[in-house]
Image 1: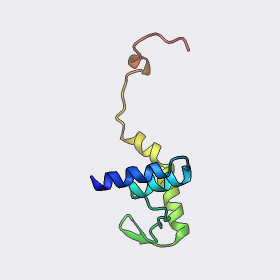
Image 2 (image 1 turned 180 degrees about the horizontal axis):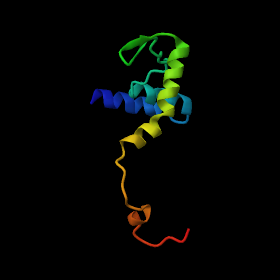
Image 3 (image 1 turned 30 degrees about the horizontal axis):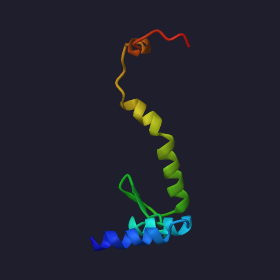
Image 4 (image 1 turned 180 degrees about the vertical axis):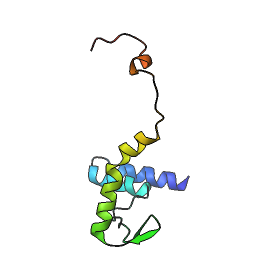
Length: 91
């Protein structure tokens, strides 16, 4: 209860000051403004990779293949896409 009253009072004090209000909200939500550091090493296919250029390439390769990889997991069907539409659509 004391914590609730404390923050209620603090919010009242920051009324009209958007910057102070956001600072207080971030404090309440325990948000840290420090930049999170990216890991320096990654394991890919059981091998440790630490070269930044190679890491960037591997991320690029992974994300550029998300669509095709998902497509490969979808079972083929003989149904037309029209069978999924409940009404007639002109356009």
